[in-house]
Image 1: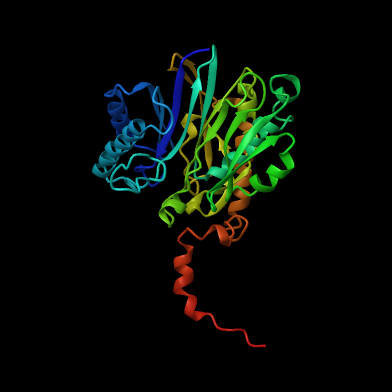
Image 2: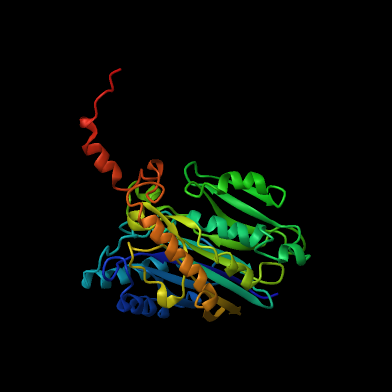
Length: 368
């Protein structure tokens, strides 16, 4: 076993080039410059999905470190300065506070982080989604850690055979509950099948010498619930550890071979298929989508990031992309009608309530 190391993945939209399409290279350069000038980190990698900047950081300061969170905040502020100079769309959009207040959670950026004891071999994958919400991870995480049709190790590997613990968060009531699977699968599905409200926050090893160790961590921040209005989609991130009693790398990415429907897409108001893409194709334009997910694989070596490997830049995911495009075409033909448009209870934090309020006085009682 190795040293304790923390992996922090922190993302923010601080300005897009041509609407929401991509991050301008100068913003990424500013992030590199800012992170390279600190001694707080062991290593880092900067990437982007759509117009979101994603910072992948390794360090020794544990989770919820005010120093690391402040570093990320200041990095996004530096990128925002560049975005404003270039007059990019939505400059500083995800920075909902005027100044850093000790913890980046609740301030706009999304974050997933875990502190681990580095194993002799430590592969992990960072999944980054665009134009969707945290509940987009529910089905893939269920497949990875609870579905033997996806993850053969649940049947074959004695170190996985007893299952995993899922921590699920209720985003409306700010409560959490743990489910022990497989015995609690049916109970858990009652909740995670409603991903707009209930989201899988983390997954833990269940039995053996490594019981309690974290296996996966997802961001669960909802921008609309933080701001009280629609300010952009959440675009969640997720860290998944692999191999040696955990899902194999191939089992983890297999969970995305089916482009399931997720909420988000145009104006955060539509359902669409989650398309797995390589870095080169993480630049959505059609109706600002359809929603994308990119996956970068790394090996840890004494806290250093070895990689990345672009996991979805693989021709075997071409059928998933083709299916996603067919689904997107079908849904687009429905225009403003549900189920392409989100149901009304999920539109509460979009701009639709402003339209409804303007027309309120035109409604009259129905007389029998």
